[in-house]
Length: 218
Image (cartoon, rainbow, N blue to C red):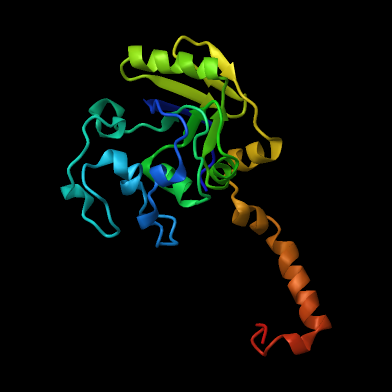
């Protein structure tokens, strides 16, 4: 998992509240258990004018030019600005997978659904909770400023605006440590790989009948 330290990026303002996970990545694309291949279908029902299906050639689909992701000024955006209760609805890890693969590393909103919020951290994304008043200021600045960019400093827990003013945000210390060091659940486990190998070696000596001749369980 790529470490998250200090990120400066273009902002896409998504001025909608209660965006649920089926709007982030519709249900028909959930048949794959891979973590890749979902970015092209992010916000599929808003992004395209036709009905999407798995395996479709998205390059030939008609685009909804009114939707933010299809507008030239937001291409290459890495920060998504949203309203309250982002990521509500059914629990699907595919939602942060789709956002992350598209290119978003940060989502800023006044509030998030709990499961989506947790899944973001597990997949290398930073969900930033700011007050509704602060988010409104960012929306107004984004609307008034072409190529609007923010800097997110995870170490200092700050959203830095173009004028240098900052909004502070809270983040759990353990989650912060994992993001700063690029550690997902597997990465955390592998930090103890030496201890795991020692345990397995002792277990094999203590209970040899559990292990086959090649050291695998039978």
